[in-house]
Length: 169
Image (cartoon, rainbow, N blue to C red):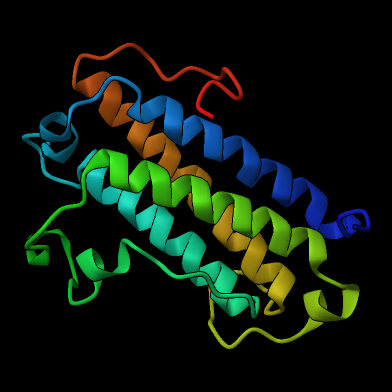
């Protein structure tokens, strides 16, 4: 396998880091805790973890290499938190997260310079409307939501998220 295209290498590294960070955030949480919404509203840990998993599936598909998405059925008809009728267990999310993370790393490693320059049909708040811009925006999106999960973890009375890498095979 050839080296990761230099323009995507750092973004792939951020996504790889976020893979471990989300797993660290979920460590020790029960399904009940993870589904809890704080009194001020907002999303739950379960919603955010499922959303992140779903978004990585979206990215893989937009890059032309889709992977079956086991959390899609939970989010399919939902336009918001209140529309979700059934929640995945954290164990199910962890399995799906690891699978899509490994898949996406392979997808990113295989991208060619021409593929990165291809126009992207989805518009995000970046001037770069190529596939590379899509990867950049969704890498930031990934980090944003991992930060939210880390915050929620602390609000649930759990220790802060750890930056330990590779603790969750």
